[in-house]
Image (cartoon, rainbow, N blue to C red; front, side):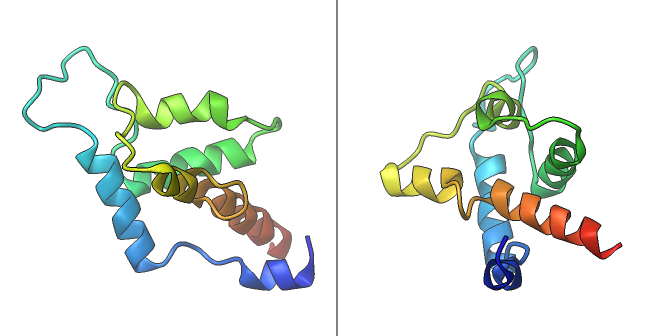
Length: 109
């Protein structure tokens, strides 16, 4: 990773965290009975732990493997392609930023 890219890596801003948290929470209609259904990951704290576990493991886990765990039975209804790209782009997704942050932190210890 280049020094410039490393300098640009930062955790999500407060606004980005709030937006992601809202996405995780609001994708499940609170008026439906979710008993017996997988609600997936419900907030950014849980998502942070999940991403940390994935990044810390000995093998690369592909998004096709971990995304179903995030969404459970309640994948969001995306508004448009732009919204999908915001959350799934390979260079700046919350997952990719988390990976780079964790990997960079490990090198500092």
